[in-house]
Each structure stands twice: as C-alpha cells, then as structure tokens.
Length: 621
Ligand code: G6P
Image (cartoon, rainbow, N blue to C red):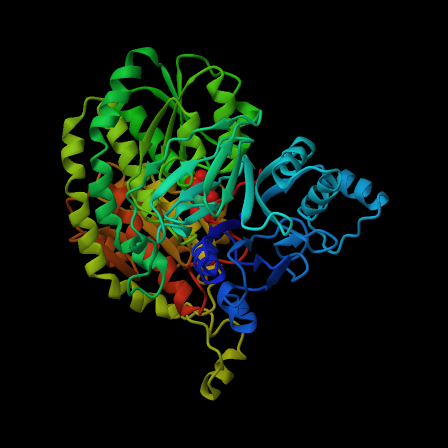
C-alpha cells in the first residue's frame, strides 16, 4: 500500500541511495515511482507511472542533485496510476515536496478551502493537499516542523508522510498515524522508511515512531517530538535481519526463493517454543474461548488454528475476517483470547479489530515484522521467524504462522508428541522441493499459445474439441481445490495462491459441500485438485474425488507415496512422504500448491512477485 523513504546525508549525493532504498519497497506498490531531492534552493523531481525498472530506464532516477530527499512507490487509491498522480507531490510554487502512504479521508473539504484561497491542484490524489497546507502554514511564519504538526491536526485518516522544503535545506520532517514508519539511524546517514528492507543495507539501528510523533532528520542526526511537541528519547533496536535476506540470491523471483526458505522458517519459528510456553502459562487458566482475526493468507492459517485448538485443547474457537470483525464480535469478554495473525503487523482492518478487542479481552499477535504496530498493541506477541518476505503472495510467513499456531495448540493441549513431529516437517518439505520439477513440468501445460500453430487451427475451429483434451490446460480459467478437515484450509490457501499470481479463477470447497451447489460447475474443462493425505478423512475425500471425476473433471491428486487408490484415480498426482498424516498436512501439502501457482504464473509469462492490483501490506480499510 505504497512505500515511502526519506534520507539525509552529510556531503553525499542522496539520489542513488534513495533509489536503491525505494526499489526495495516495490513490493508495497508498483503503479508508479518518484523521487524528490533538495539542492540549491530548488526541488528536483523525477516521477512517472510504471514499475521501478521501467521508469528508471526512461528517466534515470539516480541522476538528481542533492544531499537530502524523499521517494515513493505507489499502490493507487485516489486517482489512476498516472504520472500526475505519482508522488512526490509539490506545493504550487514547487518549494515543498511530500510523500504519503495512507488515505486522507477529509481531503475534499481541505482541497475546496485551499482552492478558494487560490491554490491550484494538478492531480486527483488526496495527498496533494498536504504540500499546499504546509505551504499555507509556512507562509504564516511557521517552520517546516510546526507546519507539519498543524497539518496533522487538520487531516483525518491514515498516514505516514515525509516532507522537505527548500527553505530548510538538509532536513526531512516525518510523522505517522495508522501507516507504518520506521527511522534508521546510520553513521552520517539518516532514514525514514515504511519497512526495514529499504534501509538494511545502510543501518540495522531502527527506532519506531508512535502515532502523531514527529521525527526530524538533519545532516547531524535525528530528533523526536511527542504528540505535544516535547523532545523525547527513543529506544533504538538493532535488528538482526541482514540485507542479503531481502535479495533474490540467484533465484529468478522472490517467491520461489521464499518457498525454498520454508524449512528454515520452520526450524527458526520452533525456537519460539519457550515464548509460547510462557504465554500459555500466563493465560491458560483464564480463558474459555479463542477468537482468531486475520485477512488473506493469515486468515487461512487461522482456520487451521481453529481445527487444532478445538481438537487438541478442547477450547471453543472461532475465526473472523478482520474486515468483518466489528459486525459480529460483540460477545468478547475477559475470558476470550483474541489472536491476531498478520505477516506485516500493519494491516489496517486487523489493527482496527485489535484496538476493539484490547478493550475487553486478552490479545495475542502472531506477526513476522519486528516492532510493527500489532506487536506494540497486543498483550503478547509470537514472532514467525521468516525473515523479510518480499514476494507479494505470502508463502514462508504462512508456514511460520502455522508453526506458531501448532506450538500454541500443542502447548495449550499438553501434546508434546505433536511438537516432536514438527521437527520432522522441514525434512518433508525438502523432499517436496527436491521433486519440484514434476510440478514445473505439469505447470507448463497451462502455458498459453502465443501463436496457434497451423496444424491446430482445424481442431480449434471445432467447438470443444481442443478444450476437452485432458492433457492440455492451456485454456483453463477455472479450477477447484477440495479438502476436508485440516486439508480444507490447505485447499483455500492453494486456491488463493493460484488466483493471486496466475489469475486463474480458483474455488476451494470442503469436499462434503461440493454437492450443495458447486458441483454444477464441474465438467471436463475444470481441473480439480484433491488433497488426500492419509488419515481419518481419506475415504471420504476419495468419495468426493469420485463425484467430480464422474462429471468429467481432470483430477490432480495430492496424497501419500504408495496411495494406490489415489494414484489410480488421478490424472496427475504429486506424492508426499506417507509419514505426513492429515494432522500435519497443512505444513507440507501446501508446498506443492505454492509451487503450482508459481510455475503456472511463470508459464503464463506473468510476474509472480508483483501480481496486478495487489499490495503486500494493506494499510487502508
Ligand atoms: C495482503 C497480501 C496477502 C496477505 C494479506 C494479509 O492482501 O497480499 O498476502 O495475506 O494482505 O496481510 P497480513 O500482513 O495482515 O498477513
């Protein structure tokens, strides 16, 4: 949801560092990119719509004079992804520049007022009111810091913003409310950024800005003001993530690199066991209900949590989408543990729900990004030790969330056996990855023909003759994923991955629910992925497999090595170590589905790291 960076250097050109930093945040938005630097009483600005590399090839973004500046990557909310709507935005006389992540909800009334005072607006954005408001206040004699304070007293909504003015060279003033912003304190280089990958190369010393605090970056250092403008000190955390963790390290995309890092994530997240035990000891006697709240992939991890906690710890457990929380969470009380799952710890809907739950219940955040808002607002935190995840589609952080949930459920239910089993999961995942070529090869069947070869044309002209070929998925635009029990949440996550990055419409259904409607959509053009790990539900999911097979579907079976029934009834199959039973299947069976979505995306010439219309961190409701 947009990324911002600001940097002040001592006697060094800022644009190359600014460009490098903002490029690391491209996962937050890739509708446009822009940089503004201050130099000799002038703001230098380069910006345009398009991905970072495209715009850089056109404009050479590193070529801007100045030792201080701000930069932005955009995920459009107000106004289309055009050059004029790109950030940074300037005031009318081009002396003030601003970057902003969030939404100014009352921008229309502010804009009207400014227009009546003679200000002109060139963009459709909500942000453009900010540099003009700063301008208006500075003209009354305020300095940049005072003007930014006045602006945040006027604007409503969510923001992380940074401003520069030629009248105060080598200075950036930044602030935040409901959108993330960190401060990086290096040696003679000072940063603000939406997320740490932007600045890890330059410093590991990070401070976190609270709501409506101001930070002022000068060439000699950083100062912080609280919401009443008192100068305050801040704890500086040294974060352990290294800059390499945010690089592709030889992989063609972040997503496939991150899929390959999942066994490491599991090992690292298992190290949270003592922390989880501590939390369980603190809360166990005082709760009689658990409620999970999350969005997207984190919601799917929560569903696994419901099944696990109910069966292992026998505590009633519900799951709510964060965006729906306020409509149905009236029954919270002090006996409810509300668990918020969020990779970023910054998802707006999740944070809103967390604030509501904090009033009546104990809250626990399961989060990947250190120091993020959710970790600072919840009573307890478990970190998924996945390292930075850059691919927009969550993979290794999902696995980390699951491990945290398995630990929590096992310890709530005193099930040491399950914890023992978790230590074998990295090996099972490595076995899956060792056979990834099977999925890669299969995924190539989804490749669209760029030019239809002459000899296919006569067949194509016959309705359905080409479409119905069972070994050919070029035409496929709809798929189903089915599972039962623990595998139902795997089906949901597998379908979401395929939708997100391959743009194939994918539906996940609980096997038993198919015949209540969706089976009407099954025919020989709709492949069905059947998740059939060994266990109690195996026979039942095999019956569901038969039901769709009888309607002509091609079956892609995911099951255990040696499962002859599945092998004989599937058109294609991917087989997994038979020690992986249905209880731990979510941790392993998701991996072939992640690989499927990745390789189908690649086969269809898409960019799996930057799916259209999506952003990694959704900081607006
Ligand atoms: C976005 C991302 C998803 C993610 C969801 C929730 O939609 O594209 O990958 O699952 O937000 O994000 P969170 O950071 O709260 O887990």
